[in-house]
Image (cartoon, rainbow, N blue to C red):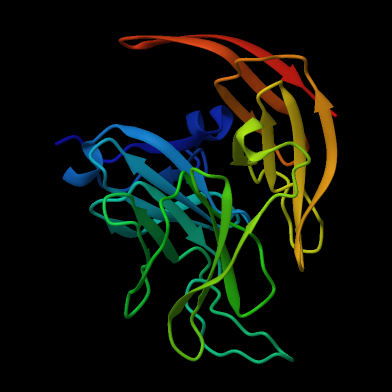
Length: 275
């Protein structure tokens, strides 16, 4: 087996002058394990940026923590089988006070997975907690200042399930609400509802959370409120037959009207929109 990959910083003048700082170690990769040889099919990042989940072709995967001011990743935990995963912040709560809000300094330790065969969401805490849910197309989390973390799931009929995960006073997982977007068009006219990429999410700054796409190509952007969801803007693209979409929390959206899958090749004709 080859040794771990290492990166060095070379200072030519110091190096050729035999100075001790001429060649400095910058980074060392971790040892590979057999479970991580499977191909990566999807990466899932935590909204606050302290963790990332790796989904593999085998169905398993692992959660990683970002440490040392973003310069290094550390493996936290693994799972054997899951269809969706969210990495949660403030993984292990040492103590909770509404006044001081003291959390463990190790971010991104805890994660939750969803398994489609059983329709179960599991909080991988100590001890682990599981809860049955409706079938889900998407699973994602949002930043939170509270002692609980909000996990959202989107069902095939476009219902939005909010699941609350907490570690105080002991690990718990409960369904908090089940809502729908207040769409003006009938639900059958909705083509898809999907979460936006959390690239610009931050606590205290309201950003778009969901994107809805209608059959006639109308895009709508949504944020959660206490009693439901509020639309922050709409774009009429005039496109029909949209099959795929991706959106950032800054409303930048990419749409694909058609796609042809060839082994190893994906051909798309994208449309880019920005409000």
